[in-house]
Image 1: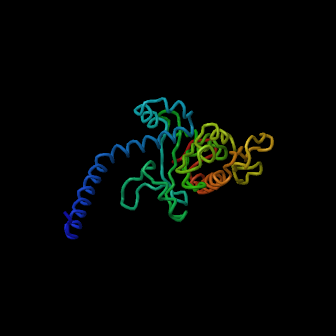
Image 2: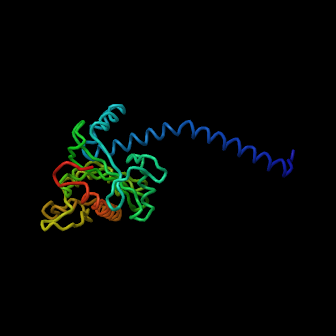
Image 3: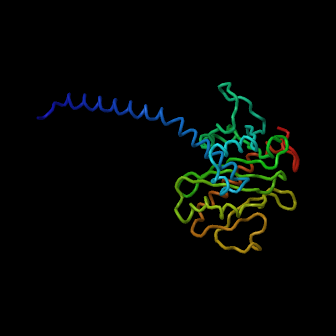
Length: 256
């Protein structure tokens, strides 16, 4: 039997309302679990910048969280390097809660800059590395990660990368441990003390003698992704210079 237009419209509205309510309910139920999983993944990535990721992946979630609480402390700085203690709502600043992607859409001078400090268990004043979140654009979509800088404020201790849509087998290789390991001990400062770019080169299997301290072996067929990584790392190293100048003494303990 043919239904009237009024009936069809009313039925569609009711169905939409019911389905919307169901989806909202599911979101509220699953939301906390999703947030917990995201927080755990972020902490794994932060630890992976200073520790072997293979070891971290073998740990139980509770063990990862316990390790993180023992060896990582954090602050949030503004672009001028000043430590931020509260946000615009008057709430205490928590570095792990800063959304790097949302910050990326703001002007550089208006962003919040989390700093994660790696130290021996319980020795929060004896910093061994500064871990900086980084975010940028790859070939197809966003790329991001965490870069650990040694207390010489120059050399890379370790790095982790993630991506949203790079090409499998090409740009997506930035998530591979072998590619990430190429950054270890590479430097941002030359012998004259001047800041230089840290760049992944175009071709792969480049002899180390041709790379030197400021260049990283490339990924075959992924030049545009590599360019995005280069821009991301070099930009963020510069963004944190004011923080380093105010609150970090080379080779020594942190002030904040």
